[in-house]
Image (tube, rainbow, N blue to C red):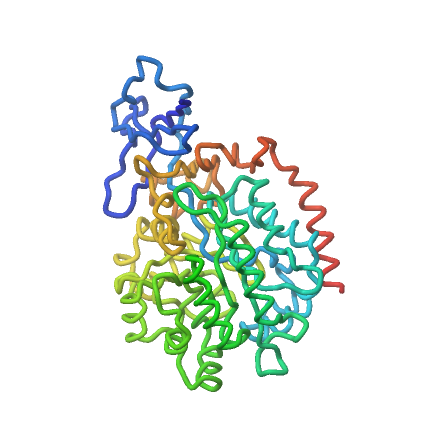
Length: 469
């Protein structure tokens, strides 16, 4: 076995309500965690003032001085659209709400190419990695001509970067001519969607602890997918035992659409198509009423809270505390980089703290609670128990943040400082016992640092091409 001791950290986030463990209280105090790099798991939590068992006998192969780091579980992103890194900060949609924003962007996105998606996915995942994220869920629903292998491209990128990914086979089947929002060139037939969904699950979906690539089924939204496809996707997910994902209750426009088209509110619609189950996690969930929150909790549905996107598009403030208190697993998502303009998950933790405090107050929305949303809560939303926590036997997915520089000068307590002082990037990130970020820079699965200058240049070129048409 090969074991690494992350020694004497400033603090370790073990979860809200848990005293920090493995956190040295004196400059020379021992503590920290031991990782077995062969199994990719955490094998020991070392108490303050202690040493790993058998240390004197040479049980530790490497000691990493973590005395200037806060260690958290690897952050987990529960909702994204990687391709949207190509349309960040585009003036025609900079000041529009969701429906107008979508209607202007759909024709641009319809020009997506395999090369552009590869670059967009690489940029998004690398940016997430450098923000402390170890697992990312992506919702890809655009399959214009020539893009049949979109999810296959994303699998390749995730493997090149050594990152965990929940890649959802999204879909749009309700075009403008049938009363939907997307233009016809962006929709597909249900038979094509379902066949490709089955192929992707059977080809790539990994099960059990330590899975790197997982596949979910993700019809885009009530205003872009037929009722039949929603129902058939739920049946296929049950058959294949994979998770379900969609946008729901993001805006009042969407609520109005569901009432006019289906005669139902969004949660009633969800129930009518067989989605009200613990297999489902929903993006946004801003506009649920009291009764719907109770129903979602009773059914075991999860919600991806996307605070920056909801603020950017003026969609509203999700009732995250009430959802969690009702039994809904709440995770965090950065959402697409055209409605957030960033893929930074540690920044999203701070955004969640502040927007939720506006609704519920400071005492109910603590620094520990929002960190739990980005870790344990997000893991639960993706149906996983092996990640999102620091415990013996859990996957060694870890983020190490330095609290140095002017932004942290004068701060006193490490966990509040991480959230309140506005950490922007991780110093080191580990996935399954392997370093994937060192000194703030993403490292590929081949052990080589990414050539970010070349990546940015190629990505910028594709972004300009996409918008120019």
